[in-house]
Image 1 (cartoon, rainbow, N blue to C red):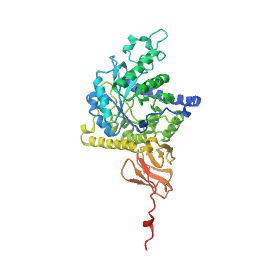
Image 2 (cartoon, one colour; image 1 turned 60 degrees about the vertical axis):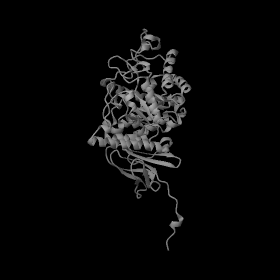
Image 3 (cartoon, rainbow, N blue to C red; image 1 turned 90 degrees about the horizontal axis):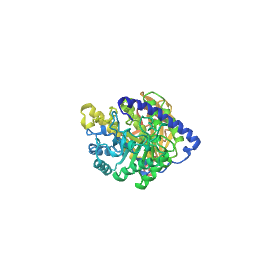
Image 4 (cartoon, one colour; image 1 turned 90 degrees about the vertical axis):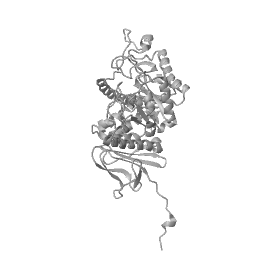
Length: 477
């Protein structure tokens, strides 16, 4: 998977094309196989309220390795994340223009990133901070100079003339019809869990590998360490029936981009939500993100306010919020492949940039804290509420028991006056979760109404009615 800047841009286009396929395919499959009527496998209870932080080693610290990252792990815990997802650490290709997604040895740590002791210490430090550790694995293909290509050429798919075939990206494809290849890769997963105590895997191009393999791998992992989390970089509907705990949500991301960058109506996001929920198994957990190592930074695509509006949506809709390292300070730099490009954290900045970065950081801390403190946001229902400007504004409730949180997000670059289809006498005020004090709504309209600036949002908890104090309510003489 070549990771030069030119290839990176091309890969982004390829992913955009691929991303639309599982949705359409998934809808057809749901109609034929009723995935939408089935139930996703149970996941660890703690995962329901989890948040994921992708730690890209080439950017996270100047050292660009595991040892250097250990010192900054407390900052991730302080932010409020629950899972640290590490960029690939397996030994990568020695060929020119290689990338961490070109794996030369599935069982070895790349020496540029550290050694076994470094990974042991990283996992131990993360666990001491109550952080889970997820590794990025690449099983769709292998590097052309992967040791197995010479040692076990029978492990790979062949062309009609008997040569090793190359896949979507021009690299050898593991042959999942070969039981020995399956055993080898499953043993590699078990190795990382058993020998390093990692807590899960992000599976690159998850839908490029037969779901039957992942089902088999799940059994081996469960026998090694209960509650290992599997994240599929795909939105294949059957992933979560038996194997995976979380799926990417490509179509959500692309819809978000079309709204925030290209000006599509905001209601498109609601329509995507409804379509995906009809397609995926009931209870499936989908990742909500506006950034990762394959895409431009949100502050570049959407601007500072637009990037924050996207994050508010990611943290208030159902699913698992995801943050890419640097998002919490609006880092504008693209992902650097195999060349250190350290993020300049607030303590390394000065003047205006320092202040702006710290403001964004505090906003992210509030998002994480809100997510951690409000069960309605992690296990409550999503109830969509109509509003008068659906081309600009999304509005919905998160409801769990007696707790209700109202979310109104302006996804446009202009001020709007919006009326939401909720009786104002029941929602005369909400307790703000992302800013001080309460928001009061005017009573005269009969419905909840508000003026929102460009990309502004209201996230407020419904204030329950106070009991009548009969003694003090008596008329005075």
